Length: 278
Image (cartoon, rainbow, N blue to C red; front, side, top):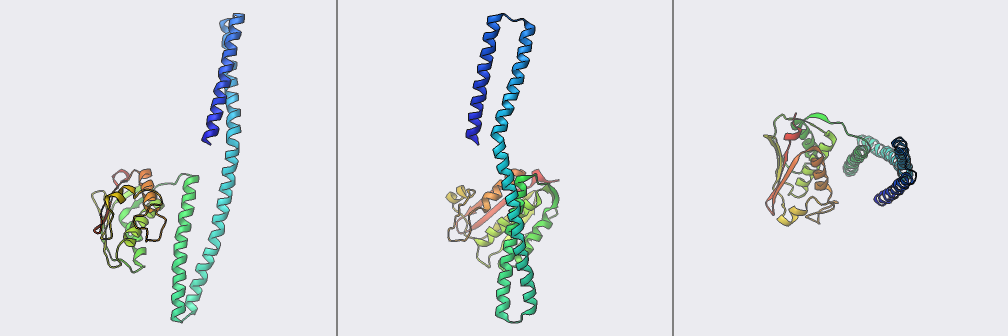
């Protein structure tokens, strides 16, 4: 698209320069009056606007058609994904009620957990698409309540213990995006800590702090931690998108993020919420 814009710009300015030169030559040859010059100037402006409109239409029309096709295709795919996902969840729920065999129940629970994770990915996909296509409305949210809700979901995994020090704190933010960001940070804290290691979340004086006692990161790793697809620990499953997306969200909302980490000691992430505070 950038190349096409440059080509169109060059064509436009070369054409307009040739037109201005022709008008100047015409004026010199026939010694036109001021009134004639004014009329020719209006004509030149009209030609410039018309020519600019033609070039813009020729350039943007294919792009617009392609975007419309992609939008339609994406909406269809998202809709079709939701149908089998809902079917899996409904059938697993019914099978759990009618099954008493422990091994079968454990398998059904694993399927159910996988479908919950898939549903979360689906919701994030829908949110990301909507965010690209339209402006996401901001909502008034109590951060303490939101964090407790997200932690309760992670506690269902019965993995790491959590210690919460939270006070009521109202902000105006993109709520779904904030939930995704918190989920990413908590998930990372759990992923890079032992199963018995405590994760502490504190909200005090405009700072939301998430701290773990995990493997931590070296200075070199901290410098690259916001790069897409970068993972400090390549033995862990994942695509390395988490902190990159966290950084993008914080920048869009005006939230300052600071990461403090030490190898084999742990990681502390501070989110300054002052700019989004109500």
